[in-house]
Length: 163
Image (cartoon, rainbow, N blue to C red; front, side, top):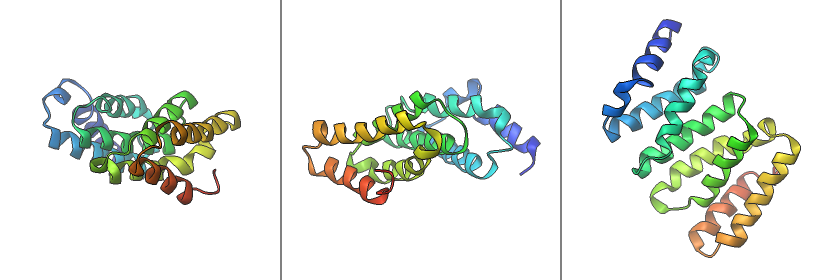
């Protein structure tokens, strides 16, 4: 993909006033496209980081669960590829730890599979310790249901070296 094409995609489709007119299905497709672009053309998109994160962050507040969770996948891919403030990384990580609804399970797992290995690279040691403490806290405070426990245990088993 050429640089001009990437510039056009970001400036025309992922930012600007047209974004408010998209249907939920279109938002999902654009979040998927943005996620793929960040993954495969991250260096070419360095100048558009602000637009990319604003696009995804805007969708984290969506009422539609699928849009919201694809936005989490996008933000996690962004964190994996680009430097991100530790406060934001922890905020996203904790939100994903607390999300265990059945309808969003595969997207939350996909987001955590991208984010969790990146934690060691993106967080300084004190913040990484906070992330592990948050995991423990979520287990103790919100681990009453089987789906929540299963969600956390899957994360722990899949990333045993980190925890």
